[in-house]
Image (cartoon, rainbow, N blue to C red; front, side, top):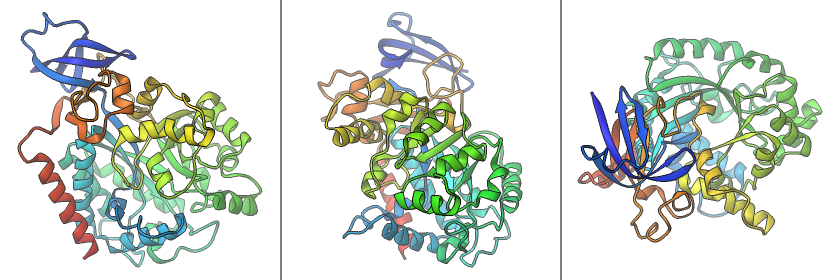
Length: 438
């Protein structure tokens, strides 16, 4: 069975085109024909601007419970982290599943079709394993399936609270004891999940949390994600422990390259930028989280020019809005340099639709043979009206609330016009978050 849609406007082959007929069969695009108003007479007409599905390449779903709470008062990343540990200590697999289902649904409502969940909450509060050592991972997989989003579970290794220091408090829930223990648990997770919308990737929480002698266990694993140089203190402590920057440490361990994504990459030396660029490593920026925590502004344009490939994530979910992440990449650099025009709208849209750093190479474009993911943006809202209905509308005017329809693998998983859809999502989020704080 096939579906035929006539898209009023769509981003195809790097530009916005009118009257694009798409045919979907078996969850993939089998025809993409611009200028097909007559040929598409028997197709469903879809008003608005259609984009490829957005990719949220860095998420910690449980952080959503912190929105509106950690912004009160003053502090730093490190004081925020203590509040995050409080939430991490409260969760059960069942409760986390309910929270994640609502958070993933919020993502789908904002046009996100693939999420990379950087997952490090594994065990009971005292550090002992559940009867199912991947109980949290399975809860996240079930939540993503129910929400209709494609999940890449980036199963994270965490062994130390900082360069050999033992884990404490909520960190006990993260620890597998060794890279070998992490590998065993990951193998069980990979073997127990059904093929389809869940994939399993690897993650090193950070060079703080995984000692140098354990890094070799992650060579040749892809996709591999790692928090990198989010804070100057990490760089200082890494130099004190090993005499090199975190980037150089990963390079010397043979972990940089096309299959690796470094997250944040905020505080880099010139050599770090060159190492990441020369190796073609991916860099995932999370601008709304980086500004919320006061982390700083990373060298996004310099990394891109050096050869690194950029993607985007919502990280702590201060907001869940990939359109905001796109434009923030440009706007933050304007603040840092006091000049405009570092990124084109097309480049930013490409960063927001990059699924390949998550190991999903067949999504992110409205193209024959690709997965049939679509995001339809309302071009007549109070935010988008009169802005041109092109890529600049998507990047510099639209918000997540302007998403009318989201389609994953040819299946509609969000319809804003469905009676009560937004209200039901709000209630689900409120209920799940209130349960955490009780």
